[in-house]
Image 1 (spheres, rainbow, N blue to C red):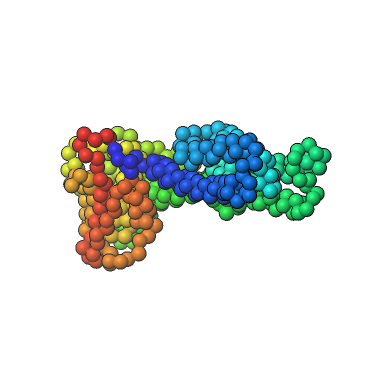
Image 2: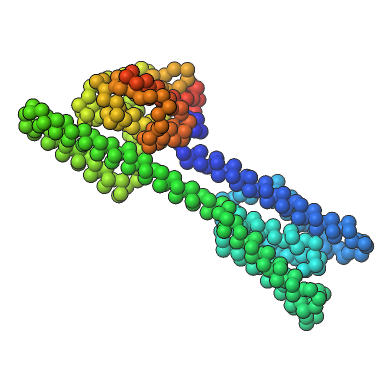
Length: 401
C-alpha cells in the first residue's frame, strides 16, 4: 500500500513533519546569525581580545558546539516526549545564561542569542515552558546586576547608568518572544490542535451528509412515491410501503445513535461484498434497477480507511443519481486498468450542464478522493446521463500491501 493509500493520518504526519522541519530551519538561521554576531563582537571588535580570560572562550566554544548540534541533529526527530525536549531547552538556557553573565550581563554581545532557547520553546513547546524560559532569562540576567550592587559579582550595579532601562527592555523582549507565537497562532502544538478540530468538524459534516442526509433523502423519495399513488388513485398504501418507511426511519435513528455514541466503524470483509451491499441497499430503498459488475479480478489491496472513503463516494454518487438524475437504470462497475482501480457509478438520467457548480456532496467526494490519493472525474451531458469515476492508483504487484 502506498503512503497516500494509508489514509489521512499518514498524510497529516508527513505535513506536520515538513512544517516542523521548516520551523527548525528558521530557528537555526536565527541561532547562527545571533551567535555569529556575539562571536564577532567578542573576538573581532574587542580592541584586545587576548586579555579575555579563558573561561568565556571555553564557554563560547561549548555553546557553539551545542548550537551546531541543535542545528545539525534536531532532537525533535529523535525525541518525541515534551518533557525531554523541555529538559534540553532548560539545559541550553542555563549554558547560554552562564556565557551571558561571563561576558558582561546586559552588556554581553550574546544577549540576543540568549533568546534562542526561548524562541525555540515558543514555537515547538508549550506556553508554560516558553514563558518559564523567558522569565528565567530576564530574572537571571537582571538579578545578576542587582546582586552586583553588593559587590558579589564583578558586574555593573543595576542602578548605575542606563542599566534600569536595559533591564526593562530585555525583560520585555524576553516575555514578548515567549508569547508572540502563541498570540499569532504560530505555535506548533496549537496549530496541530486547531487543524485536528477543523478536521473533526469536516468529518462530522461528512458523516451527517453521508448517512443521515441520505437516509432522509430516501425517506423523502418513498413518501413522494406514496403520495403520487394516492393522488393518481392507484390504490391505498400497502403494508410494504409502510414497512419501507419504518425501516428508513429506523436506519436514520440507528445512524444518529451510533454517530453520537461510538467512533466511525471501518468496513469489514472484502471491498466487493461491501460495495455490493451498498448497491443493493440503494436499489431496495429507491426501487430503481441497478446492475453491479466487478471486473477487477482478485480483491484489490485496500486498507479499511481507503475502503471507507471509496464506499462513501459510491453512496454519494448513487444518492445524487436518485435525487437529481431521475434515471431508469443505474450501473456500478469495478475494474482494473493501467495500474489503477476504477470505480464507476453511471446512470441514464437527465444529466447536467458542463460547468455546473458542485454541491456539498460532490465537493466532499473530491476531498475524500484527495485524502486517499485518488482522482475523481464527473462526465455528464444534458439528457445523456452522468458517470462518476474514481481512479485509485494501486501499488505494483509484489509491492507492500
